[in-house]
Image (cartoon, rainbow, N blue to C red):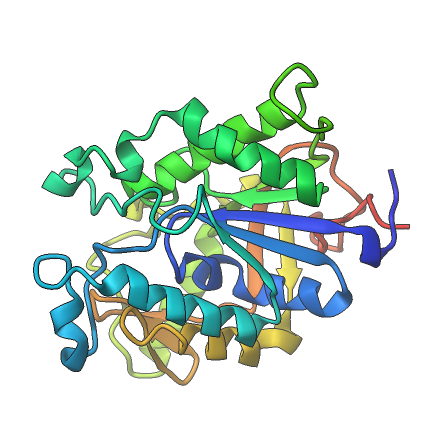
Length: 296
């Protein structure tokens, strides 16, 4: 199957506002600039996030509980920075609540995303898939990158929705089979190089560890199948990260979340193809385009 850029569609499923920039911001900006239809579905409003701006501390979930609404405005600014016009919340804004970190009481709230029935939540994503008809879906791996319950649930919901959307016997609308499904990936070699650069720049590496293998969010380089170089959109990614002052602080080519530890801002973003046929690869054996093999 081949198609022109104008008929291509990319769907990304993320857990909270800001996840999309950290994982895929440069890629999103690149494809939007090419004329690809980019759709982001965010599963919660991120109500349980820690707040980095002291003047907005009153928005915390244990005070006024207004952070979710505020992060929606940050999300709008992020999408503007990336040039993406199609952003949606799964089931509508506030349908599912941020579940907090694994093992916290927020996991048990009946309205939390972690407690959602997977088929029910996936059923809300199916109409989106059948409407925008993406050739490519991007989401997290089975552990949600690092074990956050909402990331794990987003993975489960996205993968299940892809199955249901392709089933002509399920629901309304014309069935749509997504050609390629990718999981976000952070290669060990890239993480190690990032930490080495931080040391060289006189900055403190972000984690107390003896070996990169100990980090939960890294994967072996051998499973990474695509490296999307969107260096021309590095500034757009930085601007999008800066759209989330309650959650992200930035300095030069580094950013930090509420743990106040720095990580490199990546303009080459990595992926693992888990469904579909790989397209032509670059010199390192990896695809350089998520739509490789699908373009006209």
